[in-house]
Length: 142
Image 1 (cartoon, rainbow, N blue to C red):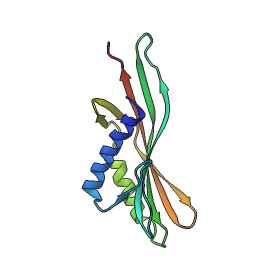
Image 2 (cartoon, helix red, strand yellow; image 1 turned 90 degrees about the horizontal axis):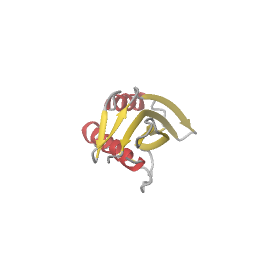
Image 3 (tube, rainbow, N blue to C red; image 1 turned 60 degrees about the vertical axis):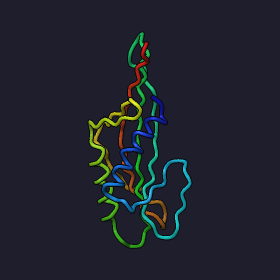
């Protein structure tokens, strides 16, 4: 398991959300080319690894933990917060506590309920961040 595999598991699940619920919504994927042109609404997911634990003595057991954050961006044009509130609730519901994401045989657990909070970034964008806490255990075989 690695941060790359954890990120990919989240990106796969977020892509399913977009395809199913919001097919016209743009996404600024982490460290990939993206440009904003005019008034837009888009998502900006980012993986924030928070640490690595070794919970088993005498064995190779690594526990990765952190937060996958989905920033919901909307240009401020006196529209209120209805759209960002709706999308943040959908994303919270899409990643429920207890869900297990898989990627290449590895598992990522959503360990707590996702939650949203507002971040006002100046006079051009309203940003709501959905934080999804995770953990992933890796056991070396052999």
